[in-house]
Amino acid sequence: MASPVLYSFRRCPYAMRARLALAVSGTAYELREVRLADKPAGMLLASPKGTVPVLVLASGEVIDESLDIMRRVLEIRDPEAWLGRDDTALIAINDGAFKHDLDRYKYPERHGSDPLVHRERGLAFLQELDGRLAASGQLCGPVRGFADAAVMPFVRQFAATDRDWFEAQPLPSLKPWLAGHLASALFQGIMVRKTPWSP
Ligand SMILES: N[C@@H](CCC(=O)N[C@@H](CS)C(=O)NCC(=O)O)C(=O)O
View 1 (cartoon, rainbow, N blue to C red):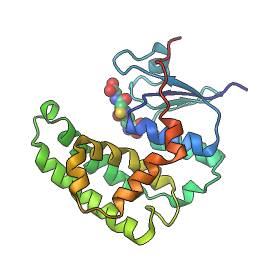
View 2: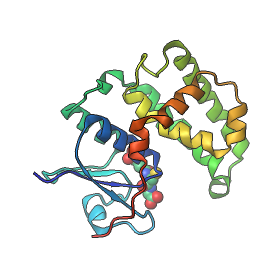
View 3: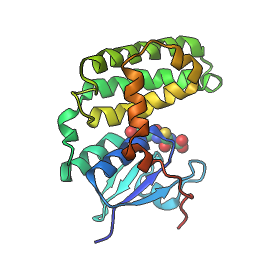
């Protein structure tokens, strides 16, 4: 049977969380790296809203929301029991208020925003994560799971916006959590560079 196809963009945090779930589930799939400025017609036909990631299953079914992709592939195969370590409320804050602040911190010229205001608000979320991680090491217990994979790519982007500032913050549990995820074979495996796909 044909493999599912994932339209993806290497640096997109939504696409990263989808690739993490696909990788940990052991699902074979064809990765099609997309240029966001020149999206393939086949991707737009499958999902006209034009965001990555988009997963097209062998049946033709299209899943075009990153969390839906994660849940769908893990429902089929979930060797690390990630679905048992989900936290929809936390992920909603990540995808809502934290992503809002991340964009306005990272791209102030695009949003006409004061980056320092949004950095402070984002830091409050990181402090909340830090408190949870102090108790258990990962977001939902002692081992990585769905919530970690869903949130970590956004924390990575926030941390990388001003590395020196981030390193100066007292986040004693969040920093090793992030570093551990970035160094993991799972993450390294999903960040391999690929030439953009063309039909
Ligand atoms: N809610 C969507 C958001 C995906 C999203 O916004 N992806 C960005 C890239 S990080 C995108 O494709 N933007 C469209 C563009 O830049 O043209 C999901 O969770 O999959």
